Structure formats: structure tokens, C-alpha cells
Amino acid sequence: MCGIIGYIGPKNAIPILLNGLNRLEYRGYDSVGVSLINQDELSYLKTKGRVAALEEQLKEKRLQGNLGIGHSRWATHGQPNEINAHPQFDCQKELALVHNGIIENYTSLKKWLKQHGHRFCSDTDTEVLPHLIREYYQGDLLLAVQQALHLVEGAYGIALVFSKEPDKLIVARYGSPLVIGVVARGEYIVASDPTAIIDYTKQVIYLDDGEIAVLTRQGMKIVTLDNVRIDKKIQVVKWNLEEIAKSGFPHFMLKEIFEQPKTITNSLRGRLLVKEKDISLGGLGDWLDRIAKVKRVVIAACGTSWHAGLVGEYLFENIANLPTEVEYGSEFRYKQISIDPSVAYFVISQSGETADTLQSLRKIKQGKGNVFGIVNTVGSTIARETTAGVYLHAGPEIGVASTKSFTSQVTVLALLTLALARRRKTIPLKELESRMIALQKIPQQVASILKQHKKIKALAKKYCRYNNFLYLGRGYNFPVALEGALKLKEISYIHAEGYPAAEMKHGPISLIDRQMPVVVLATDTEDVIYQKVINNIEEIKARQGRIIAIATEGNKQITKLVDEVFYIPKTNGYLTPLLNVIPLQLLSYYIAVQRGCDVDKPRNLAKSVTVE
Ligand code: M6R
Image 1: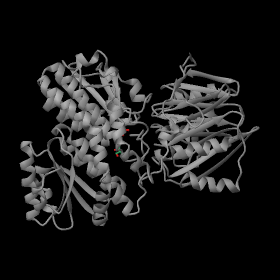
Image 2: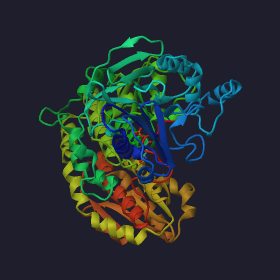
Image 3: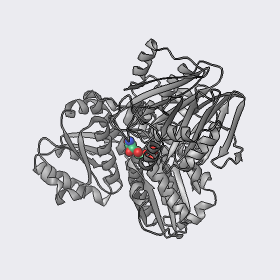
Image 4: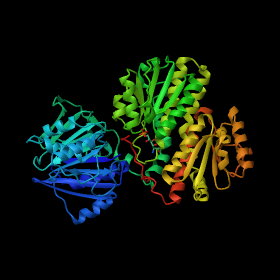
């Protein structure tokens, strides 16, 4: 969601803050601001719009200082405008604070602070924090922060500076991520995301909930709200800058789509042991044997990760004979159900910071359940709080629309399915082996699909002016239909719906006409379901619908039934989601470009949804 950056050290803070804000802009981007301390004076600049607008204004108003904080905002409380942009201040504008999260009891705190003479300028929940800290300040900033945060309900990652203690950067976290980059003793960069730090250092410390760090030019100390000292380990971020730059692609999304042969390979590396006919998932360790004995699996996730979870449901049930339910994180967290010890719970998340998924995880843990993570971002909150888990190893995903994380999630779920099927003896070893060999071929098959990207580009040109799309798939590919529709709507603002193909006749069929292109996933010709999909295609054709089919190479027959065909290589049916999703990602990308949309920064969306 919002991005936080802060710097203390010997250098000019402004270029470091701006660089960090540029790296963080993908998290949220309706307004930005910075605040600096120079000697014992606080200065600031805020603006509606993007970091570029702030940079422009900084040419006029030159801010000085080697201690400062910055913020890129994604509005929750209050319009995106200059006043609501962060930093927020106390009445005297001596204390500046940036915040990621939501202060849930801000209304009552605001009322109480007003009674104590505080005057508020913004509509934000955040503004209560600098006022509250100032209210408690009696010569010790850390103590005031601790006392104030004791009264706060909700989630926060905060960074603050105060002109009365001009050698101090204080950060705190509860529910929203915060990382401290250690450049040298006395030089630190803090951020809500390591991508904003790794230009300067790869040595980081992840703050945990309830921790506060005081960073000065003499060193750092980390304490709890009750002032108990904590020793934290420095960790090393493995991502490099090249990985988070666009590498010559016009957009991160396209770069990430094209990375998939490599990222799927990375998700498989060292895990798919074809010769041994086994799967190694080190992160799960001995838990794998215990998971294989459970009666049921429950998966909680949001958005694209939820779609991957749905593919997981088909995989676990069809191949490992393991009943599975997939829950939206936002729904699961509020369900009045008890946590069942005979269930293996999984959470899936690219960022590892999605608030609803994180709260589902915590609900399961509170109920004494074991919860396993399928996460991309190493060291993220979800990754750290799960019982055990499997990393995707897909590298940083910057484009707001998830692409490579989806294919890596499905890859990990396929690996897990085979590992469970082997232990539960639900398929013969011969079948296990052929499924493994098919999985091994996926990266090169994805590469061969990507080579045909120009065909999809041409299709996009032809279809980009339609305002409604339908996506249909069955079995393993019903979730892919949902994912194709989500990709199209989030980046090109076209209304699109995904359906299980046979559900069409229970309602959506009434929408079909020449103005509604229908994308049909018609692969896996050997599956009994294939003929049913063909019947569904006939039904659309009979109503003059325009059909774009994704079909298996060699299927000439289908050309008689549909308007357009895009062919994908043949694979084992359970892996078709990994191939079918690629043309759908490309189609949404090229349509969005044709329509002039801002692909990497679609309106109203943030990469990581760390609020409810
Ligand atoms: O980081 P997560 O995987 O937990 O994020 C979940 C969703 O917010 C995310 O998949 C979102 O739906 C994407 N914008 C989809 O492209």
C-alpha cells in the first residue's frame, strides 16, 4: 500500500529519499511528501500526484538535511490531496510522521486530542499519531512514542523525525512491514520494502510487531513498547538491482511475463527430482509427512493468489485425493469457525504482506492450527509467521498485475500435489514419473508460447475496443478463466468475467452477442471435459458470439468453430493452467497498451494491499 522511506547518516537525504520513493511508487501513488531536519529546523514538501511532481517542485524549494522521511500514499482515509499527503504533523509542525496502515480508533483519539487543545488539518487517520506523541512528550521522544502507541488500535508502520531531538529517526511497526537497511554504523535507511534500500545496502533488519527502533548517528537500538531491549539479526537481501529494473522492457509487467521460463525453473530447482521419482520441499521439512496424513486442506489467499489456490484445490483433490477448500482471506478471517487440528492450512501470497491473508494466518495460529506458507517475498511477515513453508523464488514482482507469481504459485502447488500423491499412494509411480517429466518441460514450453507474442499483439489490436469480455474454462482451467478476466479488468479497465464454461447456460449466456468476445480455454483434448467445452463453444456460436479459443497444437478441427485460435504446446492436463495463462496475460497487457493505460500503475490499485 503506502510506501515509507527514511534516512539518517552523513549524506544529503533528499536524493536517497527520492530514489526510495521512486522504487516504492508501485505500492501506492496518489500523493507524495518528504520532511527533513536540518540543525534543529523541520522543513517539508508535499504534493498530490507522483514522485516526479515532487521532484519538479523540489527544484524550486530546495530542502536541506541529512535526516529525513518520505512517503508515497495510497488513500484510505481522506481524498488524495496535498493536505492529506504524508508526512502529517503536530500543531507546531515540529514533529513529522509517515504511516502505512490504518489507525482504527482514530475518531476517539482525535476527539480526546481536540479536547486537549490539538488542532487538526487533514482528514487522515494518521494525523492523530504526531499529535498524540506530542501530547506525551516531556523531553524523551522514545518514551512519548511508546506511550502514544500503547493507545493505538489498528495497523501501523511509522517513521518520524522531531526538530527538538534532531539526531534521531524513530520507526515502529505493528501489522505493516518495516525494514531497516544498515549502510554503516550511524547510517541507516528505513523503508516499508527492501526494494527501496538495496541500492545502498543489502544488510537489513526486519522489525517485528510491537518493536520500535531508534536510529542515531551513534548507532541503533531496538526496544518493545514496554522498553525491553531486543537484539535482532542482520539479514542479507539476495535480490539485485538488475532484477528490479526493467531490463529494456517497456513495462515491468511485460518483463515479468517474459521472465516466466526462468522463474518457473527457479521454483522447480532442486525440488523436482525426476531420477529419484521424488519431490524435495526443504522448507516444509518433516511437516510434509504430517500434511500427507491430514483429512482436509484449507487454503486462504486473495486476488491472483486465490486463483492459484483454486488451481491447487483441483490438483489436491484430483491427484492426491485430498479434499480442499479455498477461502478468500477477507472472508475467512471473520468466519465464526473453530480451527480444526486435523486440517492442513495454507496461505498463499506473493508479497507476504497482504493484510487479509496475514490475519487469516493469525486466526489459524490463535486456534492452535498449523499453517503453511507459499510466499514469494523472503523475510515478509507471512513468511516469518507461518509454521513452515515453500518460497516461490520468482524474484521481486513490481508490476501491480501479478503474472510470474501466479505461475510460480501453481508450480509449487503442482510440486506439493505430487509430493502428497506419492506419500498418500494415490497414483502409481509410473504416473508420478510421467507427471514429473511433463512438469520439467513447462519452462521451455512457456518460452515457446512467448515466442508467439506477436500473434497475441495482433489479436489485441483487433479486440481492444470491446468493452466486455467473457472468459470460460473448466476443471483446472476454470481458475485460469477467472485469472484472465482479472488481468484484463485491472489493467485495461474493461469489464470481464470468468466462468466455469458450463455455468454459462445458467445465466451469462444471455449476455452473448457480437459485442462480447468470449475467450475459451479449450485445451487438453484427451480429457472428458474437452468435448463438453466444445459443446459450450457451439452454444456461443449459435448466438453469434465471437470466440477466441486457446487450443492445443495440432487441433485443426476447432478452427471451424471459432473466430480466432491461439495454440499452446501439448502437456499433461494438470499443467495446462501454467501454459494457458500465458496468452491471457499477454492479451490483457497488449490490450491495455493499445488503450493507452498505465500498465504498471493501474488506477486505484496498489501492489501490496496491507490494509483491510
Ligand atoms: O501479495 P499477494 O499475493 O497476497 O496479493 C494478493 C492480491 O492483492 C493480488 O494478487 C492482486 O489481486 C493482484 N493485483 C492481481 O494481479
